[in-house]
Length: 455
View (cartoon, rainbow, N blue to C red):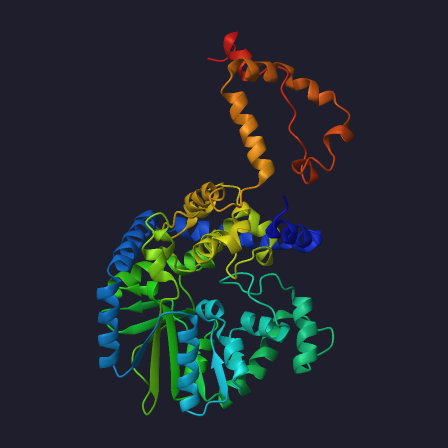
């Protein structure tokens, strides 16, 4: 049975050159992460601390979020609580509407993607401009991010050059990245100047100080908030950390895990509204409290959205972000999609080789592969298990429980090596469509053991 993911992956792989480039580029990012992590002797200790801090924070949300709210209000900020995406979108709209805002600039926020904020505001007549370069490119192309940190990683510079020719009047055929970046900056500068309000997400929210922390490399979050007097920030409630000391653990892990840098170029702390201005902060649930009540999958809330699991995942790298049906792709997206709506996103759980590389690189020790394995065990209960796989598993179980049949199968298996190719590689052999079948050894391990050839 072909799933939506497998069909989309097959489509992605038709462009072999692009697929190879996607794979190699993300593996380079993974390699950078490895080099940087090895330069920190206490790297594993930091991971353990991050995991423990997240588990503590998420089990004390009632205390930490109220502490954050009280401190943020004391700092002069307005604080709101949104139970779901609709409340979040309406709170943002009401703030903008009350201030007569028609031109709105925002920096990258996966929470906004999750809650579909942009189309909601645009339907209300508000111009929304993405200020981060990757997000801006995708906005002009009317596409969604294919990666949570490198949203336009799948777009080649030639495509960007053609886009900017149409949208910004740049030189025809000039695909130089530096030139294109300067063109985007010039175009965005006018958007920054005329924006009446700015919005950021938050990588972290510090309970003890009531501040939010935004980590970027382009500085567009700072550019956006430096001109308009109205600033909005929103974060999923799992982004809370107890204090600045614990924040330091995560800032040491985040950039190294995400892009192989010691730290992001800009780590901005927003604590008070600018003089004569307003700061509005929205704390969003949107299903997070439901995850908190699920002991099997609670570690999903540890995620700091670094994207390391995507960079290392052999399936993601070779199938592209758009092959996944949930808006967040890769290992973390598989788990979040299943927690959101298992009957809708169940096909993504097949997009995993269970190599466990994602679990090994996660800076906050989310047990990503272990959770995917658990979701696979639930597919039958959900009525979504692949019938052919069930038949094959049943056949394997029958054979494994009967040593005489198993040993007979082993003895005669090498005969398959001489079978004409067309009888093995055909429409019934899904495995053979993209890879060679293994050759059976003339002598099995069992036989070698019995003959004393293996000690």
